[in-house]
Image (cartoon, rainbow, N blue to C red):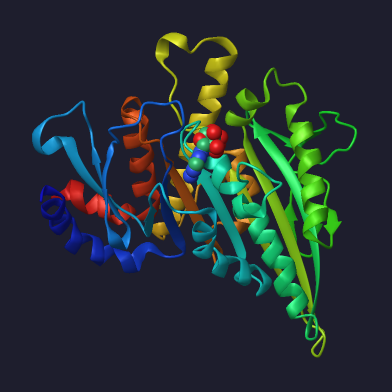
Length: 360
Ligand code: ADP
């Protein structure tokens, strides 16, 4: 089939760059068609093993209409929340071993970012997203290790909207603006000057997240609108003291629900909307630039180009581990955004592949 032909062409080159990828993993998740929507055809033509997928672009013809993209994994529409998390779990363990980990959700609005990170329904554990499963495991593993390491866990929740950082855990709902140059030190980790709340169980975190969600709505005309145009960052700081040696280990987990990546039509982009769109575009491309620069082992990593990359600076690069979930809406009318999402994902996952191809 044409899938296998294109795949074969990409395979060799792809294998060569796998080793160079470093500590970034990219997982692609395709969301199903939703009830009440047209039921296909899907722009995702084929999902292979080993993280390959083929996209059909109805706006193009012949050979150009089909394209294979390759990532660490591709999850199809029938993959459950539990299966998604199974491939994430090892990262959570490494936070307790003293690593910094960033998990991102990227994609256009409505592609399933919140579904992956939080899940559709907090009341049923079965549908819990990565956030809650990660915290549940974090507490579980720390209890298992209680005989040898005593852990303390702190949570922080911020939102970045129009390049302004806002603390979501302010209990009075005031829009306290944060200056992230004014960082406080928690156990040697640089954190924005936002509330750090000690937590001892998953329920504590669920309660905090409810406060955070409520504060996120303050000042927004519609919660959905606002949340799709801001980045939200839930950070879990872990400090462990080894009982025998008394030595301290520190790890930190950032769970980042990114602003919708959709581009705005020139004609509709005026005023506030234009400003938001520019901020989002700039910060998402700054994130892409940082991850690309890290992948290429560039001597200069442009962290300073956005608040998002500044906030996450200590957890991107070095010995930190990064996982990006990119989300695909399979509808035909989303094809433009689908292609640009996949190109972004390709850029952050294997910049060398792109470079090698364009040199051919
Ligand atoms: P985003 O956060 O990217 O804007 P959402 O997570 O809100 O998107 O998803 C949009 C809609 O699609 C929601 O109704 C959500 O429940 C549904 N959805 C997303 N991903 C899935 C999935 N994997 N399975 C079933 N429904 C999904």
